[in-house]
Image 1: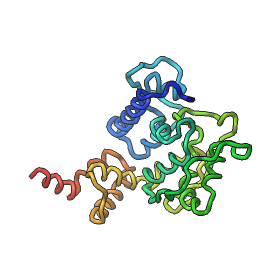
Image 2: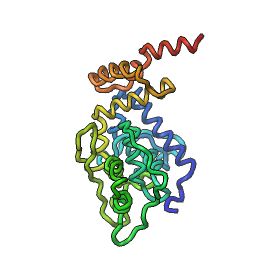
Image 3: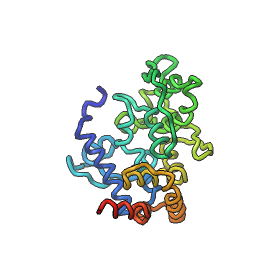
Length: 268
């Protein structure tokens, strides 16, 4: 394969990197939602440093804090953990990456593809040179276009990152196109690349509200219901006013009646 050194230890280090980064943003930086998606720093060991292309000596096991090139990296969505887990074995996958952004960051209701769809990309050819060419060709049919209008531009933004999340200037010598137009909250936004996409998501009310909903589901162990919407609306408005600080978000979730009531019931 292309990545002989990629193994279980690599995956574990990537997971730990993401967890350390999130904890650092919430508790040490007292950061907001935007910090999670835009901060050009992270924690690496020797192996992760190599994926990032960082020079110098790094510990084999422990993770140490590093500054990253802000032209290439911004927060969670440019970390190898996300990029490699949304990729094929040997190439990145704009479709998997785009679906993640829509479903997990924007809480978009995307249906699954029809059961009889062949998900294999067409082989590279003289006409279909880059991964982007192959994806565009594969998803161009009318019945694909409705969803892929949302998925593809979000995914193509990440084409500068390979299957393990390392930066690449080109794809096997071919120029990369990371641009696209993405619909977010009813507005069409021109996106230049992943840094641009992360910045747009960082201040987007739909993405912020989705982040609140995700924390709610995690904290309460269930999906939100119509009874929760008023509570979440109130928290959302309050958070919009303080820059969507994550610590405030976590405290707000414990102040709701449903949280207190749930705790009392479970303690009986």
